[in-house]
Image 1: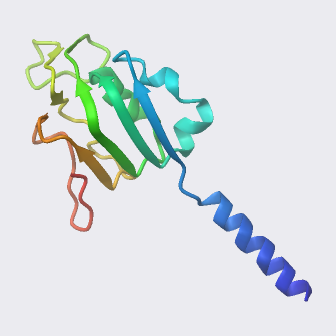
Image 2 (image 1 turned 60 degrees about the horizontal axis):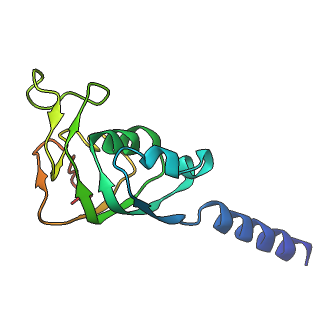
Image 3 (image 1 turned 45 degrees about the vertical axis):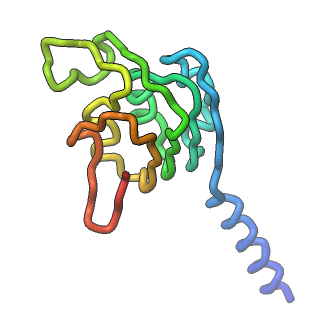
Length: 139
């Protein structure tokens, strides 16, 4: 009986610790995604749905801070133009403007946790935005 109780407690704890954490965020002002997640959520959210407006700085934030993200849904997002030097340089390093409706190149490249992503077909996706491995498809 003691072993059964120990096994049940261990199983419950394991399930709780590995549970999927889902979150839906409506970003009204592009560039503010970083303020919409707590410190805990940044490391625990596994499934994220974003609606509203985002820009290149939000992609940079997701790449650098959402360490457990495995599923990303951007189907109801508008990507707005962004100009700035605090994100990786665009394909043309002399031009620091990221066009509207374009996922910045390098987004999620070498990301080891993201396995599923949904995007609207109206976005331009650069070849080097994502990394597609043999047994994993990001888009």
